[in-house]
Image 1 (tube, rainbow, N blue to C red):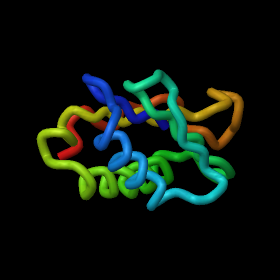
Image 2 (image 1 turned 90 degrees about the vertical axis):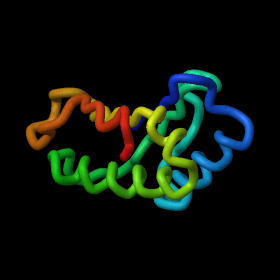
Image 3 (image 1 turned 60 degrees about the horizontal axis):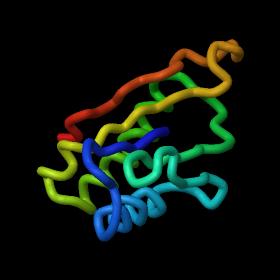
Length: 105
């Protein structure tokens, strides 16, 4: 999952968003920079199903956590992109890449 903002995602804003994501992920999930100061990458490990319902559930949890951590104006400028790897190589994978936001509201 990629979490990106139109402008830099650094300083206090970065810490609020990162803490929000950490609050709803597991110890085995990995959060780090995908593109320095602009895009956070979240590697969600051990997903047993990659169907649309699973993607929607994970996304709702993360969107809700982010919305609670930043103001409405800021959340409207955060994009959330969900990508499934390996792409199209698993039989039960129904989602390859989905842009779930630009407007989180």
